[in-house]
Image 1: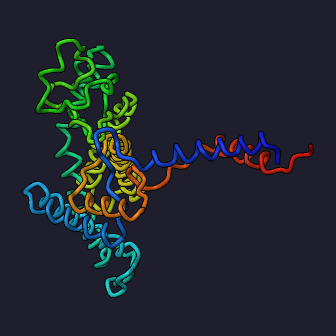
Image 2: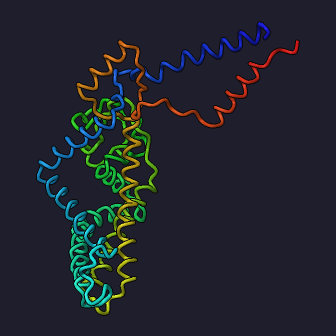
Image 3: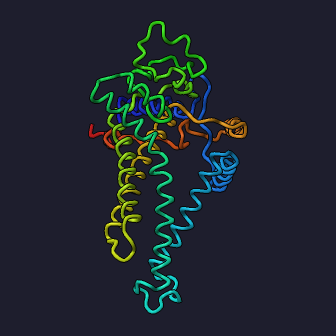
Length: 326
């Protein structure tokens, strides 16, 4: 290997060594993402968070509702799978058999549980649709600002990433002297919390707001159709295929909209940070003294290189490793 090649490889190694530590260094304000937890620790933290949530009035009813859906939905699934042969008298498919009667009763209960969310959340869903139509049809920017305030946990307005990172709901007075209100949710108190990392997430594509709202409204409309079949017809003449189709579409619509909000919320947390407990701070300090590396991202993992960049680097390393012909 020639002297020039050795210098080139040395420069590459130096550049790598100088960039790698930045992946584990804290942000300028000192923030560091919490260390990755083991499965046992994650389970314990999740159980504690669930218990604390269930102890609140809203959390109690949400957890109770979820348990009811799981219990009655599970029983309906077992009946459909013929898990109770003793109920098949005179036969499993006989319309007056205990199995078919319990399938009807369970189906009505599950449909009623679905109505709690499909109809109970309808006022808020149609409120969002009203604001969306005002923005899309009437070109009212104020309507989009209202939606940004309602969905502040996952939606970011265009230009909001240029707002001062220290500003949050409790300190909005310094914002509006020289900045357009179009970058700030309405009312101004709905501005997202100040990012823990000191870096604000970029703007969310507006079509994702359309996506979420229309899927949630579709869930309500599909629930109307399902309820019409369940309440307007009896088990003797109700088409089973229609019930199955509407159940699948209604659940799919709600799940799709919910997954979009969850995915975008995770993207915001990756940039703006998540709360760090005192225990996590102690572990980060202790591991730093022991030389244990924790990457400063939400997964505590080394970021994957882009495939193209990785291939270029591998080709350069391979070329540098070849013996010189001169």
